[in-house]
Image 1 (cartoon, helix red, strand yellow):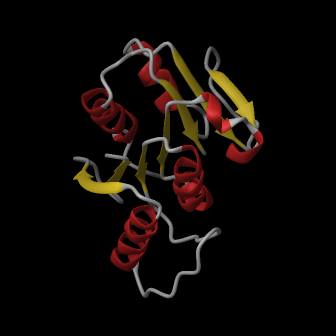
Image 2 (cartoon, rainbow, N blue to C red):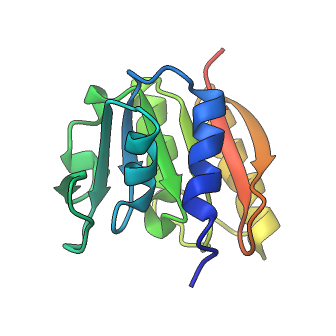
Length: 157
């Protein structure tokens, strides 16, 4: 199980980088919706968790399925915290729509792009290169949590 502080710490970084509370956020692969709940508690008006599982917290906006099934053009920001197979899909969809993204990669589970690396640092570099090929400027941040804590922010300049 991951560090229980991950939702608060990632949410706090999102608050710092995207302070406009009217930002429409898609929490991709967000599981039960803990990040969604944290962001709503901090005043964000529109956060939707998109996940293929049925389990979720009460009182969050939730859509079952995949990002590509959910009209991603209705969002201003795509986020993913330890979202496994959705990590590279977030980058692809954000690139298509010219939206910023912020992700915390966890497992090396490429679905969208060929990956020939050997480890997690190669995976991070690979994701940043794919984002940069799509026109993003990327930046890394680190969350003060145990486990995978590297954040990749992608923005168009």
